[in-house]
Amino acid sequence: MGQVRFHIREPSDSVCDARSGMITVTVINTMFGDQSASIELLDDLVGTGARGGHRHPKQRHTPLAVLWAGGGRRRKQVYCTRRLLPTVLAFGLLLSGCGGSGGPTAPSPVGNPPLLRIAEILVSLPAYNRGEWRHWIDADGDCQNTRAEVLIEESLAPVLFRDGKNCTVDSGRWFDQYTATTVFFAADLDVDHFVPLANAHRSGGYVWSSSEKERFANDLSDRDHLIAVTAGANRSKGARGPEEWRPENTAYWCSYATIWTRVKKTWNLTATQAEWTALQEMLATC
Image 1: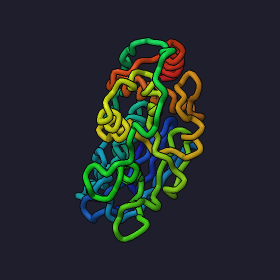
Image 2 (image 1 turned 45 degrees about the vertical axis):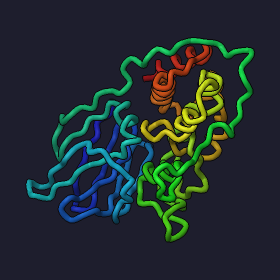
Image 3 (image 1 turned 60 degrees about the horizontal axis):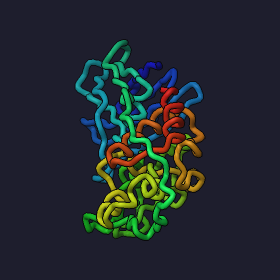
Image 4 (image 1 turned 30 degrees about the vertical axis):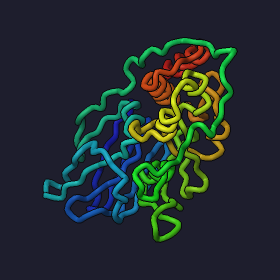
């Protein structure tokens, strides 16, 4: 596993040097306010940057470490968006202070994934009707529907909206875990149900009430239940399970299988034998 070293060069800059793995961070200067941050991932890894300015209040961040520069009082906190935190931890990255070694280690989030109940798809399964799974609702009445809420939270830079009402996201900066690509325009993204609605239907969700189906289709309580990915990747995936489709980004397979299993377990959904075999193969990459 790689080690991440942060060398603070000046109050507004930081460089992340990772020997292996992937990490995406935003540097916040708590003394001087949000500053522009230059983030580089070396060794041909994915690089991202974050521009200064105020984050949208719905862009929540989880602190990973606090670094001190030059022995002074210029404290900088390194943040990772909470939706990316499982990916960071999955690589077992180490965080260290300036010029030092060691530092806190990040535990793996994988562990032993829960076992799923194996059941083949019913021959007499009722037909799937996407209209029964009402989604992209505005649960809190702020004019931002579920899709917008996900795009706002996952953006690695402050989002811009199409109009002054701040209802529809127009642009930002997103990292698609399925393809390991960065996207700047919301129109190029789909918000993917990690476990597709049709898959949930045939895995036991067909017996749910209308309100339960709506809750599953718009669940924001699990950071990974809905994720922003390129439209092409989402439509390539469709309603297929891991026995038929896997992300082209093989570095994400471990996290993908772990999240898929967790979501199904949380919602008491079943897996076919072929699906479970595929999950085991992907978990073997952890």
